[in-house]
Image (cartoon, rainbow, N blue to C red):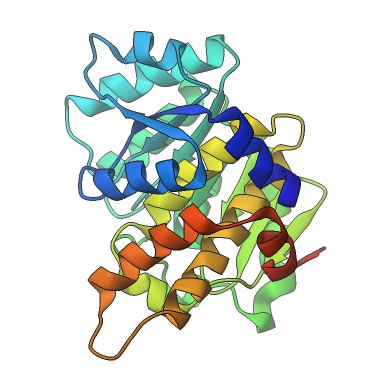
Length: 272
């Protein structure tokens, strides 16, 4: 994982983000903090040009509208044609017909390298329908110690079906291809009080896999561990009277200061 982070810092990949406008500023700052370079464009007349000059494309469907959907499709097709790395964050898939339809159409439009979401969103893509309540996973679908083996099997089967790495994030994170699963236990519940930690993570995944194209599975797991570890580091630095706004900034600061050895030592994972 140390090498994965160092490769991001040395290559400084340019990442095209068509992302949630609620969190776009934090996404850009997280990418800068980790050592990558962000560019945000959802204008249909330029998305193909922007995608062409970038190392990876990060698509987040958190704030869909009739203008951004065609832009996402065009950018995804262009990135795929250039064999650039592509990440999909299917925010709220299953919560509305539009979100589900758009996510599934994106999967038809291009081959994604990584799909990152909570387990309800990933189930929606795996089965073609779902019952996601907003952007949070249904409690019944959360990954817990008691259902971990079943969740790992689901992750592997879904990765095989969708022909990509699947990152299921929650209290326990799973990063899986069809053969191996990283079971990751970094992070804190307090991170869920901040809007956008998931959006930031998807962008970080795009940076990590573009800088480590030879091992998308490990690169994705490294990004997930890095985000969770920085959440832990940031929380330790919180002072009395500080809240989620400060915590957000401290997480970005922790990403900025994160060292390879620190990530290697602090990553909490097992391979299954």
